[in-house]
Image 1 (cartoon, rainbow, N blue to C red):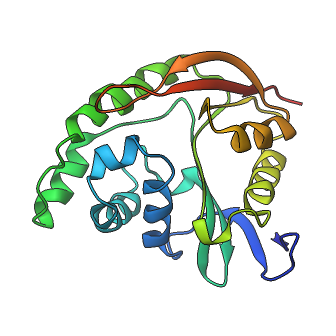
Image 2 (tube, rainbow, N blue to C red):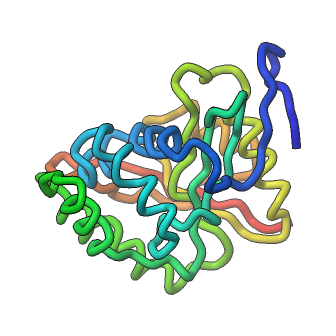
Length: 210
C-alpha cells in the first residue's frame, strides 16, 4: 500500500515487515523508541543492532517477524509498529545465547528488564483481548512528516474488528494526541518500567473494535 506523507518528498509503503527488510534499521528504531526498556535490555544501540536482527530471524521469541508492521521508504525503515497477542512468549535464553556468541557482556540491567518488563508482559497477556501495541517507532530523521499518522492509519485499517491497546508516557502529549485521533481513549494511569527510580508515569490507552 504505497502512500505519500503530506510534504510529498518521499514515498512510503505500509505493510508487514519482511525478513528481507533492513532488520538493523528495525533494531535501531526499537531501541530508540523509549529511554528505559531497550537501553536496559541491550545496554547500547550497537548491541541491539547486533543481537535483535538475529533473534527476529530465528522467529522463536516474542520478537517474531510477523509481529512487526513497517513503513518503508527507499528500502529503509521509516517507522515500525511492534505488537503482540495472547501468544506472547519471552525467552531470555535466546538473548543470552546471542550475547555469548558475539562476545558481548550481558548488559547491566538486562535481568531487570527481563523480569520486571518482559516476564510481566507475558503474564499480563493471558487476559489480553485483541492486540497490544508495544512500540510505535518513527525514524528521528522522518518525524513530523506524517509517517506516524500513516503507520497507525494503515495498521488500524488492517485490524478494524479488533480492540487495540497500548501504553504511552503521560508526558508524551504529541503521541497521546495522535492516538486520540485514531480513537484511543485514556483508561487509567499506570507506573512504567525503569531499571532505577524514578519510574515513569504512563497511560493505558484503548481503542474499541469497530
